[in-house]
Picture 1: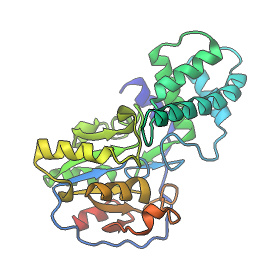
Picture 2 (picture 1 turned 135 degrees about the vertical axis):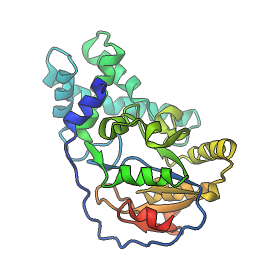
Picture 3 (picture 1 turned 180 degrees about the vertical axis):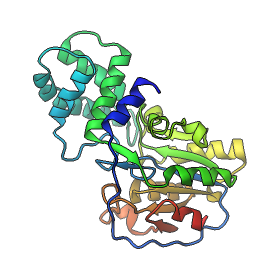
Length: 290
């Protein structure tokens, strides 16, 4: 186990999903050759509901603790206070530059963001390893995660049934490490085809960008001779997941299994006229409708 996986396990205690009160709609999906998943709020319980967000956590204190755990020295309490604001400023500046470059929903590369924050706070170079450690230490404090019940069993049973597995997720470099940390298996060892995994930090575009699903569709078609209308996407957000996947031609399943991360988007006009093909409240229900 690498050090970052150890950090994840040390800072992410068990989290149970919170009931949503949503009734499942276990409609049969018809022929399905590939299954794509969201990660945060679907395969993993997310303390804040999504990657890169903070709920009620004191982010200054979280940053102070993360700096100490990552080996930084000095007035770390002040650095935590200043750093939380500089983190927001750098993220906003990245998004603004991306939109000006024509990207509809820019995604940050969080290591580059943290490098700028640390340079401004300490006026000294930090190694890439130290920056990565800081990013993980901080993220696990503001957004602890834990596998959704039966997530690995569901993944393996779909894989063993001969269907292609993939991921389309808003993510950062540490997101794939969740699989190896909690499951003891890499994303690929779990059964996901690497060419069918689209991570927002690699694309520098985030859902609900409509560019991500066509890219995985291209890989499915070229590598597996599978079309997107033979593919189902499972996610917890009516806009980022259901709307975007439907626009690309996928069948869709809304995962309504955790109140923290369920996003119904009832006031978003893009979501008013669409319905998922099925609604599940536990991942094992997916096996019933495939």
